[in-house]
Length: 113
Length: 113
Image 1: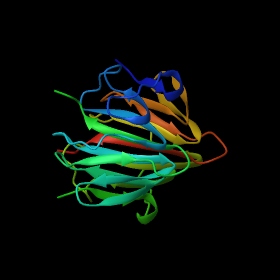
Image 2: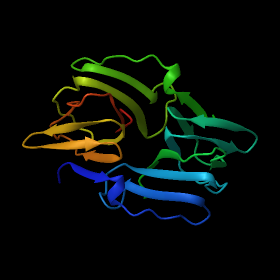
Image 3: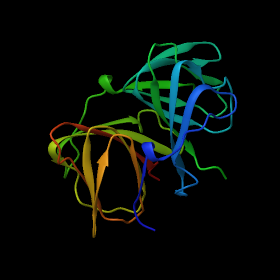
């Protein structure tokens, strides 16, 4: 195997269960089968959100464009272009677009075992 | 430990050895000590590049803005906003900005052992 390129514009987006106003494109995931972690892109429309949930793996997120917030168990934090977020395994979290334009973010997860 | 946010604008950039015209900010790396992988941001100025090199770990790259190209052993491939690239462990590679404006990209690597 050698370098593989996958373009956001060439992949069809889906709306994962529990999301609202979300276009999800797993650019480097099962399609490429990388050894250690998956890189996925979320576009969250104004008023949209991911579910408030928790799971046993971490997130590493980077906000590519737009703004919104991350909601946690006892607080929330604004997010804007250029912000990166590390979400701990088992930490309750939700991404919300409370702005008037699209928020795009990268979310990297460990490869599922 | 709980959620940590690190903003690109709050971190001082450096120019790693062998790079030209590069501003490097490791947003989620030693500073946060995530368990499995590091998320870093590269800004490559027009005419700039990373070194043509190889190493034992993979890259997962996402082009946030601008355009340029990736140079490999026997070919090169244009890169533009929204493109993701998986670079194999031990694959010779170089990122080059041959355009007239800044190229920003995310590069995720496994946590060094």
